[in-house]
Amino acid sequence: MKTLPALISTFSIFAMSPTAVAEESIHLPVIEVESPSRAYPQTASTTHLERDDLQRSGQRELTQVLRAIPGLTSTQGMKGGSSGLRLRGSTAGMGLVTIDGIPLYETQPSAISLDLFPAETFGSVDIVRGSAAMLNFGRSLGGNINLHSRDSDKSGAGLHLEGGSFGSLQETAYADWANAEHSLNLTAGRDDSFDGTHFGDPKQGNGERDDSHTHQLVMHLRNRLGERGDLDSSVYYINNDRAVDKLGLVRFPPPEFAIVDDPGRSQQEIWLAQTTAGLDLHPNWRSELQLGYTQHRVNIVIGGVLPG
View (cartoon, rainbow, N blue to C red):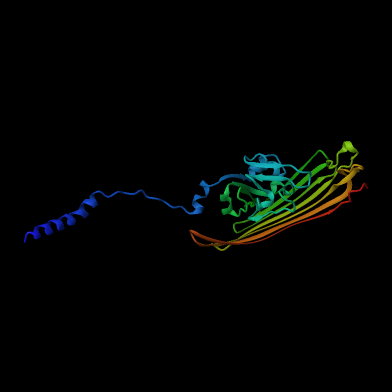
């Protein structure tokens, strides 16, 4: 009978232990987990330019506008030729630039023919720095440049005409038609440099100036399909024809090569088109399907390395 009190005392200690633990409980902090779309503004630096910003810059060529953007390096090429573009280590040939979500690729590595697109062709520009650009059609780790078609919701028309040195003449005409359900934006432009710059060194007897001629046609169409659906389409066509010189043999022996005058021509044609269908399935759920096409074709006729 002496063991019974010991068993009862042991049972009482274990019975009281849960109450003691409850009084000493620790409250842990609340941890919130965000989706990538909500965290996006915190993982990238974005510069947004509206159409008014592009017009206030006073620059017709888009590369001249982008040159003033921090973190973006732009090198100017010959008139009608390719230019260099770099954003945090990503170059133009890596899908750095998109137009309405479609990548603008180039036939030359690390170069892009962005000079062929007048700045007034676009309605807005987004420069996204960092890897988060991949969440918005980006294909380069350093960031990307998103160009958006002009999407005016007001009817109107306009004409831009300017000229300058080297016999240059630029004209752009646009027309907009819009109502509550539909909008159509048309842009046509032409850039001419009748007395262009030299490819070959004029001090070495290369007095020929190389001309350049570019035509641009752009169409953007938006349709509202009922209360939940919409259709967005755009088409870009660029045609450029310019004179080019060649790398020729100027002395022998020993062999020495340099850029010399040549009656060669370079012709390039750019097509870019896209159609995006969107449907609002729920106030917090929107689905989109985009079909795109892009082509850049270059044809160069040039002489051999021998003089003439």
